[in-house]
Image 1 (cartoon, rainbow, N blue to C red):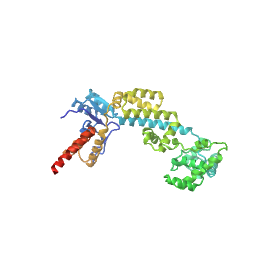
Image 2 (image 1 turned 90 degrees about the horizontal axis):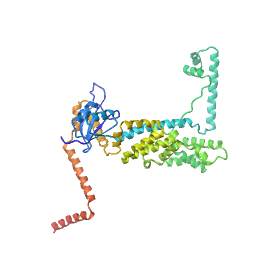
Image 3 (image 1 turned 45 degrees about the vertical axis):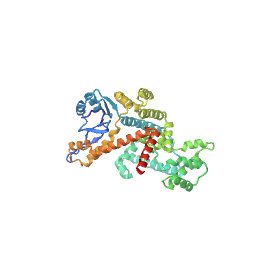
Image 4 (image 1 turned 135 degrees about the vertical axis):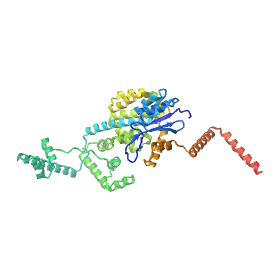
Length: 437
């Protein structure tokens, strides 16, 4: 057996789930796939992820010096027990995933606070206001009727049958002691949202024709109905009428301008934080700008995410301590959980942000394992699955070897001076001309 130097362990609570069940036993079990990173080939498959099993396998291979793994505490304990001489490397993708989960919690918390503090409601048309007032008057009349029936000695069940309402609703209205008011509904995202800024600009330029604006939005990709455009124009018209004569256009724009914090979910905002800015569309860049300006906490979170992603991409692990200190000084409670996890596994995290090794080459073998497992329909045993995962036919090995040699030849040709390449070509031409002569 050849010397093994770079195995990778994949698994843990968030790792790959391998179904090894028989038809009459419907259950799931975790397994461990071990891969040689230097050759990018699987070398073993274990039926579980237990500390004893992994440690026993590592003890049989004392030449291992580097192990890349995910954040599983079981694998960390197994490596310390079975290969104490090996250096543990935390996978960078799992580090970013764990940070994204904490950032999502922080964004959700901040957005909830901003939405509760934002008392501004969009301007409403006169018809909508009249309908709301009519509903409020109806609710007040019904509430007064309920109180009259209660004074007459009727119970909540009898009142509910008389008025055709739910008994639980009657009990809740009586318990409040005043007329119940409905909560303000959170604005829902609509197809017109990405085009509100354009409509406001055209409105300020003097174009108030709904059909014309609807045609312009169609040309820009608007998929909604013209009625959505008309409703939004009525909102702009009502805002214009209710605003004072001395209100500047900039103040009016700020009061009507759609806010990303009202339309984006926490997961969507998190995705904006973790993508490269040059990969974002113009409207996504605008949403990110509005989020960062909406709260100092969001701005600080974005800066911390950018610095950590720079460490991941450039592998500048020496900046980890400085980054951890900045997170502590920010007092962002959701990110403190990530800091605590990093401190528990700091050596492996530092190695993951410094060394080139990661679990990336293993992901393709995991997809192949899933394909093999599903093609067996759960009817075979673990031994057959292991043989199929570790089997590499001669043709595939020859193809890989041929591809590798071809890449080496291309690299050598690029490194050689242009004069040597021309000399080789001329030599071949001379040989050919001699044969013709």
